[in-house]
Structures are given as structure tokens and as C-alpha cells.
Image 1 (cartoon, rainbow, N blue to C red):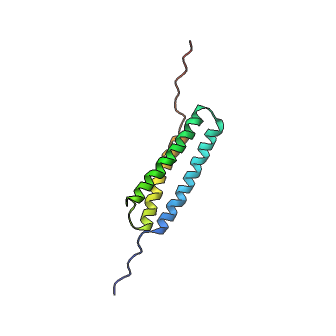
Image 2 (image 1 turned 30 degrees about the horizontal axis):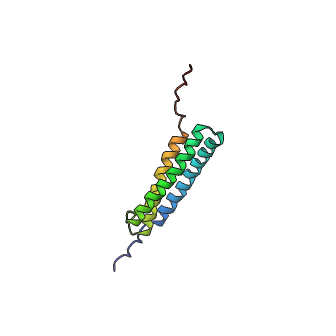
Length: 109
């Protein structure tokens, strides 16, 4: 008698990854809201960047799903989708939590 086959995919891993993504996304939301609350040209650029990133990320994932880029196993596809968004969230967290970019002083005269 052989051992039963393991279930396809690992839903526990996907659930943990989703929780981690949620926690880091909340940090990014806080950082962005803080920046937007101060206003100014940096806030405007961040708002425009945020909307563009969301559209681009969703479109890329939709294309991957439609073309089979996420695979056929539901749990594995879920993990790939979470990692797709997690990479973007990590990059935003690094960018927003780092030191402010150096600005050139304005020339007068």
C-alpha cells in the first residue's frame, strides 16, 4: 500500500504570505498617507505614481492569469499572485521609509 499523495499546493504557505503582505501593505499605506497629508509637489507625484502602479500591477497579473503564467494549481497560483504584489509592496516600503531624496538647492537670480 502506498502513502497518499500530498495535496496540490500548500494553502498554509499562501495564507502566511497573504498575512505578511497585508502587514507590509499597511505600513506602506501609513507611509503614503503621511506623505500625502504634508502635501506639496512630492505628495502629488506620489499620488500619481500610486495610481499608475496599481493599474500596472493589476494589468500584469491579469495578463499572467489569462495566459497561464500562474499555472494550473490554485494554491501555487495564489502564492504567485501574492508574490507579484509583495515584490511591489516591498519596493515601495524601501523607497518610502528611506531617507528623503536629496534636492538641489534652487538657484536665485
